[in-house]
Structure formats: structure tokens, C-alpha cells
Image (cartoon, rainbow, N blue to C red):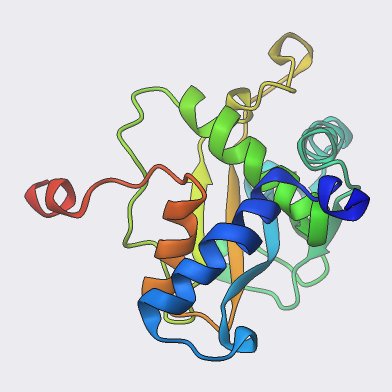
Length: 196
């Protein structure tokens, strides 16, 4: 009983309520067929901040501190794998800073994203349901880091956005949408989206 009390709130909701509903709705007979979120990748592109293919230390520190604060995990710097002259990118130069979250840390992050961060987005009218890929993974972008309550904008030199990708196992777009909707993700209603 003590172990179940320590489970993150959304994980408990998923296991006790959403997974059984999902099996019933989509006719899944085996619990191992049930899709589940397996990781969340938070990524900040930093290519536009490069000077002579080098990253300014204040940019690196600001983006790294932001991601570490909102995820509770140290980010890594991703370097370009090959040179692309059109984008002025050279092989080996920094291109992004990212964090991969799994298990309980992922569920806590998802809870804060849905209940604290998304409601703080200016002029928010709901998330698009068209942002699922063919494997059921969901992607969304945030324009600035100020929407996170943990970030003190008085101590930040510049604003930057981030890309958040929720990765599912054994899923389809319909199943992933059902899971996210049931745990509280504020999607736009389909009829509203077709009108706009």
C-alpha cells in the first residue's frame, strides 16, 4: 500500500482509470498491448545563438539552467552530426540542448505541464490534435520559458522557446489522444478545429 501512495498522481490515474477504459474502448485483450507514455524529450534549439560556430557562455548557462529547473535533471548539449552550408551549420558545433525524462520524473513533469504551465500561456485556446505522428507521439512547442512558474524572469537575460515531445509505446494517434485527454491535456474540440 505504501508503494502505491508514492506513485505520481497522473501515473496512478493512468494505471487505475485510463488504462482499463482504453482496453475497453479499443478492444485490447492483453495488458501488454496497452499504450503508455515512456518518455518526454524537452529540446531547445540554440543554432541561432551561435557566433563563429561557438556558443556564448551566457546563452548556454541560461538555457541549461532553465531546463534543469523545469525538469529536475541536468541537460546535455547536442552537436551537429554533419555540416549544412544553407543553415550555416558546421559539423561538431552545438545545435541543441535537451533532456529526456522517464518514469516518475516524466509523470511529475507532465502533471506540471498540464496543470500549471499550459494554463499560463497567453491567449491560449487549446492544443491542436493534429500534432500526433503516425506512432502516436505528441509534439508541442512553447514560445518562451516564462510560462513555467519556476522560472524567475528577472534573472534571465533573454527569452527562448522549447519543443516538448511526449513519446508513447505501442500506440496510435487515436489511442494517444485518448490517454492525454483523459489525464487532462486541454485539446481543442475537433468541431472548433475544423471551423478555423
